[in-house]
Image 1: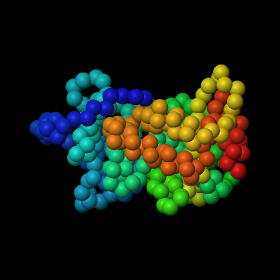
Image 2: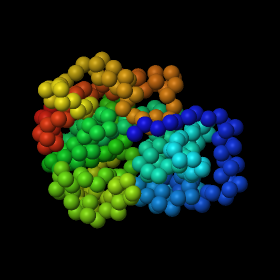
Image 3: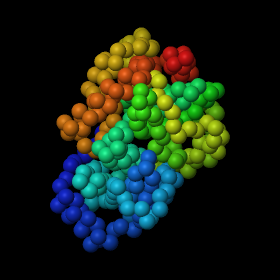
Image 4: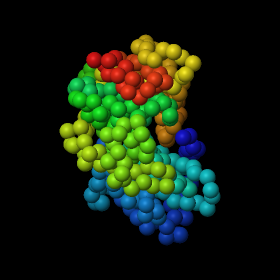
Length: 313
């Protein structure tokens, strides 16, 4: 999942711009509303712009952009990112996976929001269960997606986000906000949860086996929510050597795990000391209002969902 992200100077970004303009490569442009930020996509890839259109809320082309996402090939083979933080311009070179486009668009909005508006990013899922928010965070392969949709199958549950959400503190409350119009889901979720077979059957999958889908068509609008208040912060792991399946840990221990693992977010664009301090303070404040739990996902998905919901209830 990790890939190189290099900070470049305004002069280097200007050079990239001139090269793209000289080569007449900018064929498609779209603007998306990502939690109030105007993120502009520019690319020569029709598949990318079409998926972007489906994935995010649209914004008027008359609105000036806050951040720019430029997706092109540079003649090389390896995917890499260059980010110029003054103009908030992210260059994605040789990208053949829309998931990176989506994640960097969200990270770009997050970079702006945490600096200017005290909104913070979490790379993870969030569901509302009986009026309380449950965050699911962890490394790739730990089961975030599987468990998110497992919880969503239960009564009195609603999905806020299955991959990335934003947080803003209002007094002693951590308000969670969704990030995408529609979800970008992998094929295979129906193998764990048969309820989602109709969704997968109708989806148009890309070369990486993923598709943007409208959950409302299958579940109804009442199963989707844009905002909730966080009560439980769940860190997922998959360790077959550890027999303990669930454990409530101290806030200090959870903070340490988050910091040591780069907040389980490989898409953060700027990782200097200032940003590290800002994000560490955010997680510390978040854990002051949310119960921290570590869940080992070595049991069956159904059993793990039961464990999480029992801990929340």
